[in-house]
Structures are given as C-alpha cells and as structure tokens.
Length: 93
Length: 271
Ligand SMILES: Nc1ncnc2c1ncn2[C@@H]1O[C@H](COP(=O)(O)OP(=O)(O)OP(=O)(O)O)[C@@H](O)[C@H]1O
Ligand SMILES: [Mg+2]
Image (tube, chains in turn yellow, orange):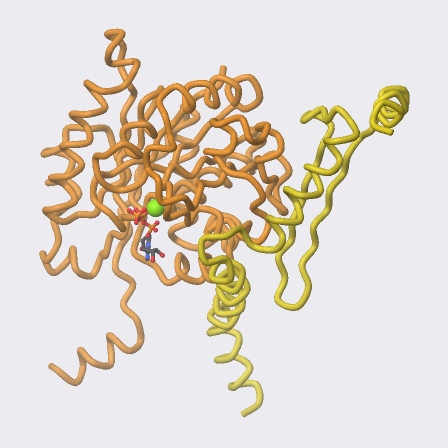
C-alpha cells in the first residue's frame, strides 16, 4: 500500500513544485504595485552610491539575484581599480 | 557562423515557448552555444519554462536602452553551461522595444553564440515582427487545426516580405514544426492530417511533436522537456528536429496512438 501511494505520489510530484515556484515569483511581482520591488531598489541604489565615488565600468560589474520564499539573495560584485578610487575619493572630500 | 532562428506562429498558445526552450536545450546538449531570447514584452514566460524566473535582474529592453550591458542581462542555465537566456521585460509599454535596439543586441549576440533563438509573441504586431526581423531561419509552429494553419500561412507571408533578408532579396529558410499532435484524434479523423497541413503550407517539415503530459510536467518544474525527460516522446521529437536543423537526414516518425489501459477498458465496455 505504501508503495502504491509512493508510486502515485511521485507521478504527480511536479504540481507542488509548480505551485511553490509560482508563489515565490508572484510574491515578488505583486509586491511592487508599479514601484520596483525591494531587491530592485537595493540593486539600483547600491550601484548609484558606488558610482558616486568610483567610475563604474559596466563590464566589471556582476549583479546576481536569487529570489527565495523566505530570503532572497542579491549579489553585487564590483571590481574597483585601486588608483582611480583614491583620486576620486580625494576629490570628493 | 551564428544563426538567428525565430520561433513563430501567429496564433497564440500553440507551443512556441515550449519549443524554443526544448530546441535551445537540445542544441546546447550537442555542444552548440545557444541563447534563447524572449520577445514577449509584458508577458514573459520563457524564464519560467527554463526555470530561471528567480534570477532575472535585467532584461532585453534594459539592454536595448543601455541601462544594462548584455552580459549583465544574460542568465546562464544552471544545467547546461553553454545555454543562456535573455529575458523579456515586464513593462506594459510595447513601444519600448525598437527595431534599432533589437538590431544592435542581435549583432552583439552574433559575435558570442552559434544559435540565437527568438521566441516570438503571438499575433502580428510589433513584438512578432521584431522577433522575425533579423532571422536567417524560421520555425513555424503549427497545430493541426484550421485557425492555426491559417495564421501560419499569414506568418509565412510576413517572413517572405517583412524580414531584413526578404528586403535584401534573400530567403529566410523556413521549417514547419507541428506540435500538440494528438494521434488518437488523428486516427479518428478529427484533426487535419500531417499531409493536409504540409500540402496547404508547402513548407518543409522539421518535426511532429505529440501532445504529451511530459510537456506539462517539464514546465511545472521549470526544465525544458528535452532535459527533464530526454526519453519522452516529445523530447525525442525535439531532439530529432535539432538534428535536422544541423543538417542531418533523420527519418520522420509520425507519433502513433498508444492506447492507454483506461482507453482499452472503456472500449471493451462500449463494445
Ligand atoms: N506537445 C505538447 N503537449 C502538451 N501540452 C503542450 C505541448 N506543447 C505545448 N503545450 C502546452 O500548451 C500551452 C501553450 O504552450 P506555449 O506557452 O509553449 O505556447 P506559445 O505558443 O508560446 O503561447 P503564446 O502564444 O501565448 O506565447 C502550455 O500550457 C504548454 O504546456
Ligand atoms: Mg510563448
């Protein structure tokens, strides 16, 4: 009997995955109401702040996201050239 | 040489997105570098079918508008390292996508990839015309029923007149992909036959993809059917189609009705 249940269970197993994926996606898409969602906001503001101090080379920036149900990950990877950063900082102060 | 391939249909819901994902993955599996582009602005879905929906940061329109670099918007597949996705924007503004923007993005992609697969939206409006605009080859996705075949005919006319190749007096190589083919219904004469469709559209056949539960299962878990279950009937049809795209001669198999147990039981009761 257990085997039978497992058999049927595994055959229908893709629907719960679909449900979970949609819940995660829609919770992010609905939240925004026209405004960008939090992850979007963080991304654009972080890049904004950094670009005030460092000349950003778009080729040297990696932005990755992983939207999760309970936690999401925003990974911003910026290569900062040493010399340039100094002079810019000095000019700003 | 990079090839730009549009997956188009006119009619909605015939299987363009499913086919783009399945063919893109099958091409990548034989070692080609592939990017699939979602042209369905406002209604992106290719990211979901590919299982990349949680990782979208930038999109096609961001790239055309210079907000993001191409390599920032491209999402690498988690299973195949030479398969990439360029997602559509969710903006409501359909005019955000411009001919010039698409031209630049495609030109840049051509320097990086062997195959550029453009998943067209339904209809004959801007999104659909831009998806086919720079195509070298086209896959016309058709279901064996009257309205789908009629719309395919319309799309074939557009491929022969509205593409850059057509304007230059060159040909866009066209392939017909019949999808959602239900062999049981075909056997009962309830669907247009393959021969009928081929005769009406006069376009070489690339493959016949059967109607199958495996397609739904694959999209539920966010994996192209050719990756999720490569042995399934629809996956085999897509894999054969890819071999034909690569120039191989592969005998065409028409999916045959495999009577289910339930079907047989019902039949016995009816008899
Ligand atoms: N061979 C098949 N067997 C069963 N279901 C299929 C098959 N191909 C596609 N489908 C289903 O049909 C529906 C529409 O498919 P899909 O989204 O690929 O079509 P489309 O042409 O991209 O649609 P649109 O015009 O809205 O972009 C989906 O639910 C998909 O799972
Ligand atoms: Mg689609």
